[in-house]
Length: 132
Image (cartoon, one colour):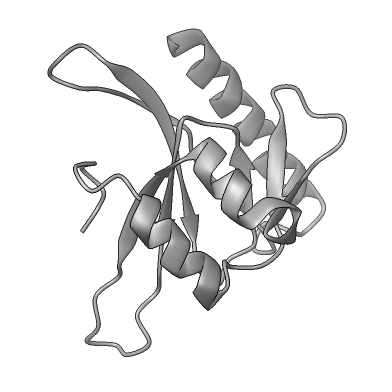
């Protein structure tokens, strides 16, 4: 898993450098890929998708969807979900693959709809450290 995270992070650095060279560094958020280990020895990779930001995601085990509060004094809300769950619920409506990248990356197109959000909430990982 460490090698996969290193490859994804090297690719993220390359994508960010290319965006900086072309003056697009503020156009997209290239999500970081992190590796985690649970006390029982399990391991997973993770990235965060932030509401309101066009995000480039690596295909990871867990996607954290983080909402942005509507008010300054509000608190963000996070849902942790398996990648395949988000893909099944949102499909091509929310994201699409970026051609020619290895490892694969996906660009977000829209935030999940209210209906999709209700389904994702029901299927989220409630015991995940990022869940609130």
